[in-house]
Structures are given as structure tokens and as C-alpha cells.
Image (cartoon, rainbow, N blue to C red; front, side, top):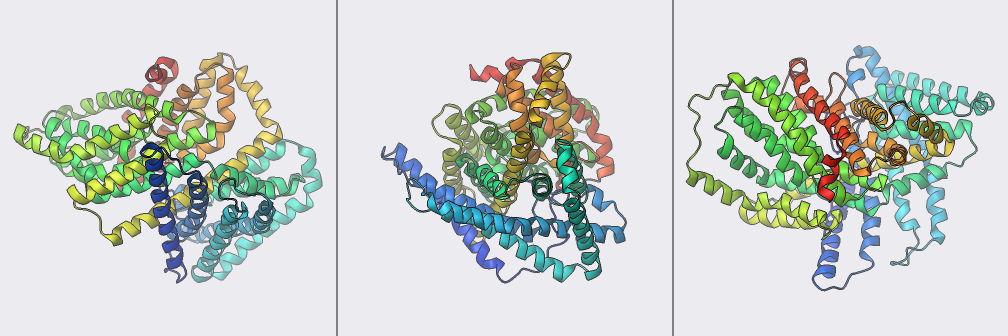
Length: 620
């Protein structure tokens, strides 16, 4: 989901999880109750609207309020669980002694941002008291107080961890470095204000890049960049940062993100995804490259249910890798296909990336869902060609297709699971239900089908899934907020107008702009992971694309596909290491195997960029 990739290469806000704090358990219970409450309320609203034709007007506001509280409490839980997205590629390669100082610096940097935001967050909550929520008729402060609460909770988590696990000398040096930087900027403020938009380069590019390389979580890289820029070069009050964070996190469409995350957890736990894989394996697993086709097809279908690349890979790899190994496939080849296949499937609805993109760029989510299937099929074809070529020496000895009666039994068993992605896509694509509504319907459907047909879920397991959903939602939501603040800062500076003029006057026009976009999102996909890259640049790039006459759906497909190539591009792409971890592959070996698949995806992206009809044909 960007998401939702919370593996070692992209998470670890703090180096290793410390022992569970006593006060984390109540927070987890509250977050679990809020997530469950959101699902129940949304489903109640759907039933009330479509069955009884009596919409309940206060449900949306209640869900919106619950969502921001889930996100901010979840952000504190994610902090404790080391699940905030960050880049650790560079830090992990540093000598151990230096790494300790860099990790301490990362903690102090996060603390600096949170300390800087406490007062503005409380002031913002106080000022919102005079604004009443239309349906509930209560002060908006009850909703936005979640931001201040989340900041305080995250500060407590980081502070306790730092005191318990980081040596005092490392913390002292890190604090001195941060303090010297802040003092230098403060003293140089009169000169900095004269530099104009050069400050954007200093604070929003160089500073953010340094923080990113140092392993500071991506959300706080954005936040610190914006905070430093506003404090040292402008007179703009910091409440504007909280205001932009609030706006970035308040779109009701985003509620579907945690609900689809919960859906992915339900599918993994019930074995519904495994049932789909078994059907595909029985149908085409006996032919040459058959298991590779099954892997790609499973990712395509399962992605249409869970919406999460990590969930997809974790479902598919254990089910298929043993048989693929028996047939002579190398582990490195399997992991390479797993990672690029997950990248291919990221445009298949209900992709979390597409939902977030539609929200921040103002693009029709129904249109994105319809187009995403066609685009994914183009990318799927390119990977199939490479997979067939790679499997030319595959060992098919003692491999036969099962009896049709056995296939029929597998199909009947998997039918409820197979129906779910089609229900999701058709309901949203045909305008029957919104992405938020259909996500809730899908969760209820999966819980019922899972209970009666696939073994069910224990209450303890379901509780842990609710907490996991809250933590991932928090990690995503904080990035949404700080990226929104950063995009606003860039826009207000006037730099967007300069960028607009430059990109719209490139030699080659539309084709040149597309080429630059592909390059930019491949690079950012490597460094920032999917969601942060899109959240930062989508509000800036989409108006330029529209000015050049590029259909917004086509442009969305190009940048999402490009971003996913970057995500899997070694040696920096964070998704590459996620695939290696899930598939138990040696990164150095997988790196050599993945290039033909990366090339295939790149060819697919170029075709999608050159032929607009591919992205828009499903809309006609």
C-alpha cells in the first residue's frame, strides 16, 4: 500500500522492539474496539441505505472521527512495534559503531519533530472548539484532538525506548548535532529568508534526503523538512502544519484502507487465498512454466481481495515455492518472480495505492479500478513471456493434471473466495457502492464465509488482526498528513509554477513529460516506497499532466506502475528486500535473477504510456 509494507527494510522506527509497555495494552484494546466499531457502523450505514432506503446522516461523521483516532493511536502502536515506514538500506551497511550514533540521531530527530508539534496541535484543537460537526453537533475539537493525543503518545513511546535501549553517550552526541543544526539555522534565519525558493532545496530536498538516509521514518522526514522550512525561513504559524495534516487524513475514502487491510488479514487466517491458489494449480500447474503462471495468476486474483502486496506475497509464496523447487526452479528465480508479480498486481482493485491516489489527486476511484485490471493484464503478459523463457529447462517428470473430479471439488471449495474479487470490482466499477462501502461488505462476507467454510477465526486471532490493522493505518495516516503538509508548502512557495512551466515546455511535449514522470517515480519508488512518493508528488504532477492533455486515469496507471518498478529495483528498492524476506531468498542472488522481469515491467509501462487507449478502454 504502500502502503502497508512493514518489513525490516522499510520499518524499524527504532532498531529493535523493546518490551511491551504496560500502558500499550489499553491503547491496543481501544484501537481494536475503534476498528471494529468503524466496520460495524459502515456496514449499518450500507444496510440502512440500500435495504431500508433510510440513510443515517451521522454515521459518516462518526466514522471519520473514529478513523482519525484509530490512525493516531495506531501511529503510537506502530512506533512501539517498529512499523513506521523507513529506509534502512544505508544504515544497515554502516559500521556498527557509526550505526549506533546514526540510530540515536534518528530517535532524537523524531523527538524534535514531535516536541515542535505539541503546542501547535493543542492550539489547533482549541481553535476548532467553535466549529460544530454538522450532523453530530459537537465541537470539531473532539475529532482533531486525536492529532495532539497521537503526538504525545508517540513522544512517550520514543522517549521510553531511547532511555531504555540507547546509550547515553550516543543520545548526547545526537542531541548536540540536532541542537547545533537548529541553532545554526536560527542564527542564519535573516540570511535564509533572502534565499527565496533556494530554501526548498535546502530543507525539503537536502535535509529530507539526509534524514531519509539516516533511517528517520519517512513521515517524520517530511514533517521535519516542513517544520524547519517554516520556522527558519517564514513567519507562517505552525498550526498550518497541523491543519494540513488534518486535511490530508480526513478524507472519508481513506477509511477503506484499514478495512481492506483487515480483509487481507481475514483471508490469510481463513485460508481463502490458499483455496484460490489450489484451483489455479490444479488447472494449469502441469504445463511447462505452469507453476510460474499459477504464481502470477494467484497474485493477480488475491491482490483483488487483499489490496496489499505484502499480504499477497505472504499468501502465495508458502503455497507454491515447494512444488516450484521440486521442478528445478531456483530460489532466486522464484523470489524475483514473486516480487515483480506483486508489483504487477498493484493496480488490481482494491489496490490501497489506487484508493489513496484517487483521494489525494481527485481521480475517480471507480475509473482507477476499471482501468487497473486492464493495465495489470498488460504487465502480466510481459512477465508471462519472461517466465516461459526462464522455464525452458523445467523438470516436469511425474507431473500430471489432477482428475477433473478433483478439480471440481477444489473449485467448489474455492468458489466463495473466487467470487469475492469480482464482487468488489463490479460493485465499485458499476457505481453500486463506494470503495469504503464495498470494503466493509467484503469484510463481513469474508468473516461469514471463513467461519462456515474455511475454519473460522478465533477471538484472540481476530483481536490481534484488529490491532495490526490499527497499527498499519497509523503508519500510513501519519505519512498522509506530513506529505500533505509538504505538498502544500511546495505549492505555496510558487515553485510549482516554475516546475509547471519547465515540464510543459520540454522538447517532445507529452512524450517527454511521460518519460520524466516514469524516471521520477521509479527513483522515488526506490527511496520512498509507494504511498509516500504518490502522496508527495501527485497533487503537483496531475495538474501538469492535465494541462498537457493526458487523461488522469492513464497518468495514474503510468506513475503507479513506474513506482512499483522502483519499489522492486535493487539494490535500493525496499520492496525487493521485502520479497527476499518473505521468499527466503539471498538478495545478492535474487538481484542477478530479477533484471529480466524488471525489464519486462518497464516495457509494459512504456506501452501503457504510449497507448492511452489501454488505460481508458475500460471506461468507455
